[in-house]
Length: 327
Image (cartoon, rainbow, N blue to C red; front, side):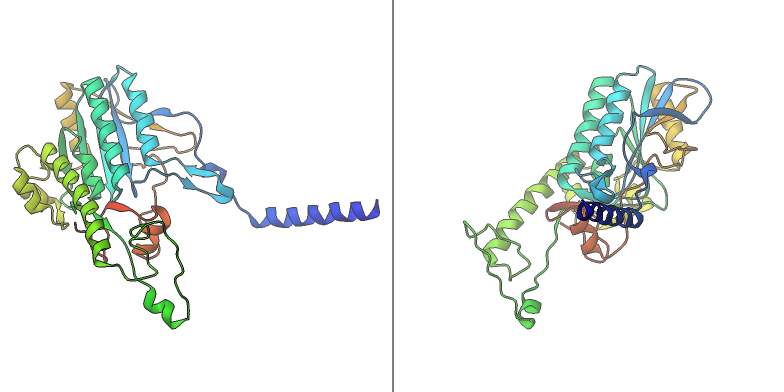
């Protein structure tokens, strides 16, 4: 009995110490139904402001103990558009895009979801590019009826990147040898543990080329004033300032977020409108420029750490400063 009580006391002490070392910010956790809030305007029909922010991924972000801190951007945008589709009072949508891009598939899903909403509701969708709306962020904007940018926006970076490093020289120096077993010659193509063989590089390039072709197709469809040849000439991975993008035909106008509201009202045939957001309990957006949720990470650590840590290996529609973001 005495031993049992001692064991229980020890377990309680360990648990207490552990709990004292773990700090979980419950306010930052995802959950609760979406709530509607007016952030701009006083009367009239509604215009929905939708954030496409941070690195685009199909995966959510986790807090301590694996608790979901934020649902994926794909899930959140889909939920917001579904709610707006059921509300006849929503007469237009403004996409506020601040993103360097992300995975090819997340970019594609968001693009498709916006197209689906437009077909269902037949209301105008205006994209407003914020500080950074590059690569996958620009891809998503192509679903809008018109694309606007700030004069200080950075956009473009049309292309695909497959990130990889070769650590074999370092492993040789510390006496580590790759012993990977595979079922086929291409199963570990792109492995950081050995140099890439020419045939592997060629095969991976075919995937990059396919995804690049899809990117060009989406931009060609979203920029009817440009021919496919003109799009390909612009789609070499470089970024553009807002004025450069306007001159190239990649955006339709320069202006700020209130200007985007006015254009959406005009396209919807409205003289007055209220801009609303959908937010989770505790997020408390205050005005037109408030973010609806804590943004997905766009910084911290090296570029390689950010990409591999958040997205994992893969083919990305991503502007990767300092490492190259071309096709």
